[in-house]
Image 1 (tube, rainbow, N blue to C red):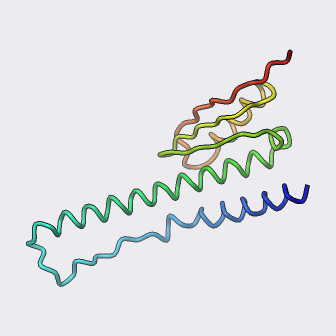
Image 2 (image 1 turned 45 degrees about the vertical axis):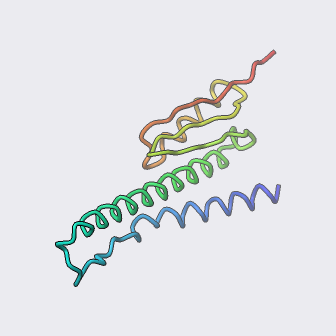
Image 3 (image 1 turned 30 degrees about the vertical axis):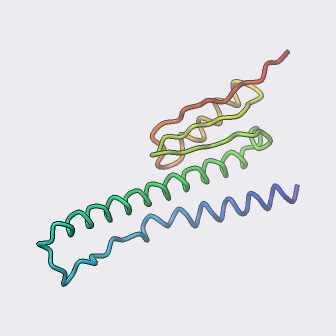
Length: 130
């Protein structure tokens, strides 16, 4: 039981820490004083912006995943299930096994309630009762 509490605490702290990361990422103009007529300057600036945008998206996806996992652990009916969460571009995929259709739906509801989630792809398998 202590391992569960420790894992929950670590997950919660990570969610809080990652939640603030997006606002701390800023682009800095590193081309000041350089010859902007160079054909490479606009390309390099564009690549930098794409890379920074990708990093922010990755941080957002990681934060979404962490928040969903923490919320699932906090739900008494779901905490014992092995539910895997994957997020890409705000689209969340749930996989693993749920005991009942209600628990599968509950996990999807929790995932969809997290800020930044665009869509939940619920791939949870429901165990047969027989």
